[in-house]
Length: 125
Image (cartoon, rainbow, N blue to C red; front, side, top):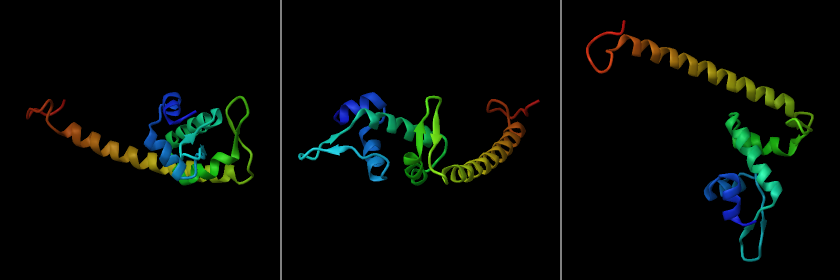
């Protein structure tokens, strides 16, 4: 399938598909004219990329993860020995980021609670 069909099937715009290719996450076939040709497997790869990005993984990590996971019918399962340890490290990094965001949210909640209500000078009760 050509780029337009890939965009339609994945919901990912052309620019992002090219970016995924530049990052080594996606490798469509190239016609002599230079046009990209995607397979059904590429559609699934884009879905995995989107899922892993949503999980907070950077593209460099995703490039290492993609060849090391297979769909076992109930979800993605690791097939490379070092993958689980690497993903545990990523999970810890995300856990720390969540903790920092929660602290920031708490600080904002405190400031908002001390401020005026609805743009007036009245304090929140």
